[in-house]
Length: 386
Image (cartoon, rainbow, N blue to C red; front, side, top):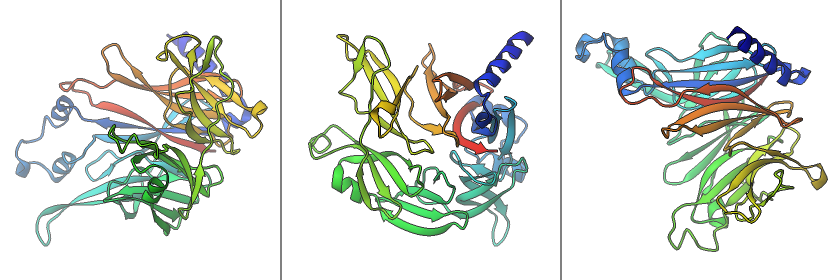
């Protein structure tokens, strides 16, 4: 066992052996969600009557999760360090956080507190919170949360934050950071009307220049409206003011598998950009002469010069990829199906110079409802540049 650990550490160090790697740190979070059994085990000593429980016990029972912990993984040492935990009765992180400069992160969260005046009640302040990633567990509220607000999306420079919210329509809000001054608010439905009336947003993010955003939109439903030829799903660019800048042109490149051809019936999926501005695409190949179901995914690192494009085989499809500040590494999460049809989350890093992959963390699959242990959900936050 000791020799296996030493061998694993040596392989880790060799994989991240260059100076760029040693100066970078990967950040991820673990959220512990209660099962029915783990909730009962966690509060086994608490009274069944709210009036006989302490304020902390009553507040803790209102949490949606037991706790969220944020960790850093140092490429210099191969060790993980706890940066922040919301464990306790009052503050709860509600979704994955966005990293920012200066060892901070921005999260949607809620602060709960029991008050006795003017009457006894529990208050809950939902908002966007800034948390410190230095082990102090400090945080402060910045602004109120928007309806159905997904996680904050930061640009690479750490100067802009984007929120997409939905009430009766999709609205995008752009803030300056760290002032958190609202700069622009615009209606995303104008994009749908222009390109795909039956579409809905799937993902969004910033381009490398920190001034433009991309939105991936897809058709919803199978009725006549959803399948109309006027619908053109895909990935579209917008300025931070909301100006429509057109569609992202897919880049596929050569197929990196012998005996396989490009699967033309699947559109390459835009994954974002490297800090250099090179675009990333998820593409698929199919066995030549074989069934269309025999698909193999691969990663395309685009370039204005087709000869300079790179293609890397993938062991599985990826939905979100986060490049390191140097552009040398790409982090992503694998959703691995177990034999009993549960899903394990595995965190991987790909070396974009060699194409080599390294698994750096694996979360256990979900527990059955009667398990005394909570479920663990893994989320990728991004990178810190030390």
